[in-house]
Image (cartoon, rainbow, N blue to C red; front, side, top):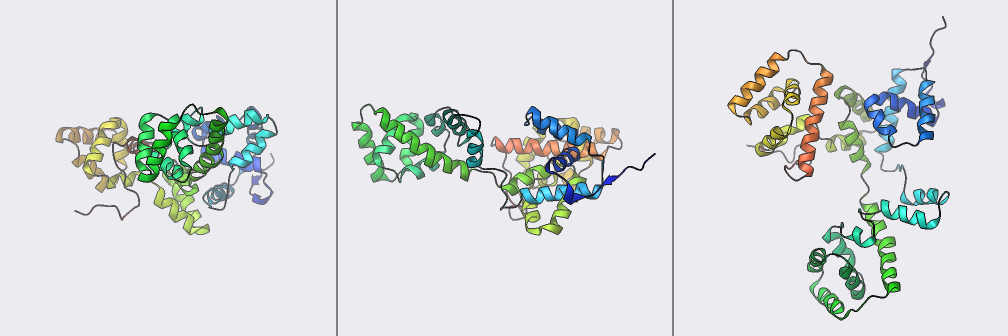
Length: 341
């Protein structure tokens, strides 16, 4: 029987081959989520490449993952832009359809320009409008909801706001060409700039990816990245929110998390937690609940590290969801925001 050749020729690998290795390295669950975003031809090409890869050395897998992490966390790297996407769409669609699609993906959600403005923060909108002609601002405020218009009006300089009010009082039906002109300006100047400023930071994106890796893989990639690009590694680590960071929550927040999590997953997560963090969670339970949890943890015996990692990642996600809804506050940074008692 012929010996199996182990692939380690990094430089000769094509783009699809690199993508195939990364998909296999991610595992079935994460890879399946990515396949959802691909079209049929992409799935066929990637699947065929994966099937023909053969054996890939561990060194090559690590090197590819580090290269991916390094590129996505580099401020100089761009995966794509609105402009390049628009040029690509124009090759297969007419201008009207492309404009509709681009309007949907630029800026806040909404079908029309005025619906989009309803989802723009009043401070952001006021900051833009204060540099426009009072008549333009009057048109804009007359087209959005009254409560939103009131908030924006209150943030404008007083003399300018009064001028806008006077224009609104004297304003009759706005001619269609004037309205189209205002819409066009908002779309090309305001919404496109807003979309660019709201683009996610690459290091933040990478931190979220690393948060979803198992602990062993995460440590491996961070260590390798530190050797290649220490600054990028440090920025990613500072943005990551890990299970141990739950220890920085105040007692009220911890109790909110405890009410939200599934008790069986909590037991597994605490089984692999540090003694300090475990004690912190127990101190925020009732005596009876703490006793029952300790008994459950003792009864389950040894637990696989994979199950511990999954349960701890689940608890981190619950905390993030609660923070996103404003039910708890997660302090930014690691160290400066910790409380000393």
